[in-house]
Length: 292
Image (cartoon, rainbow, N blue to C red):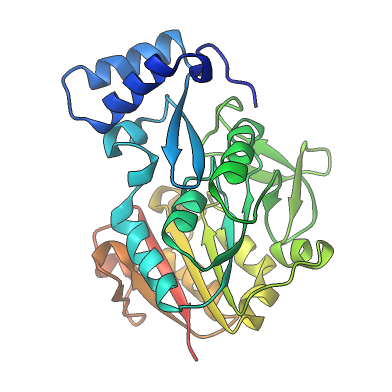
């Protein structure tokens, strides 16, 4: 992995300062963030995590707001992690739309029973960091430079940047495209992956959620226990003329599940009512837990 512009590996003092600035609430934080974006847009910051070194791009404001990758949206991911840990069993974790692997690192930090972690990311820029972070901060982890959908083939990846990642990239099926696409079921079959009885999916794929679920139907239906976290993007759903219920229906067509809202303390979702009649219309993570 090449570290461009500011090589934090050879500048430990600078790196320590940037880590300190991200963790603290000091005047000038946003000014420093803006200066780095303007003058050193590819700056990387290295964090020491329990399992190894985790590298983040300095241009991601969320890490400055939250105080580093170890604090990444814990109000939503810790309830998810607690639910996984309640299974008290080895599990296979698939990070679908992994970006740089922050959620995979959190899972491996807080879940002792993570038997294997496989993270998919089509953006080549983000994938370079994902590969490093998976090797360093997961147990039995693997990074895969492919997009997920309900077909196998090629697509065009539309993104604002391909240097250090783009959370809002999306794919369009295109035989002449430059991005490999696979369904999760096909990948598992082709790679002869042996799944644990508990299978956990995190899906954040910017408009391909229904297709990803359809392409993972065998994996979801055959697991003894399946836990799925899906990120709900209202703006993306509106563009696709979809609602959260479109995603719920796609999962429920495969097997019965209970829906939980982690940001609200894992309260159960009432499926007789639309999601946005129960909570404010905003971006949410929702969790599907297979019923016995």
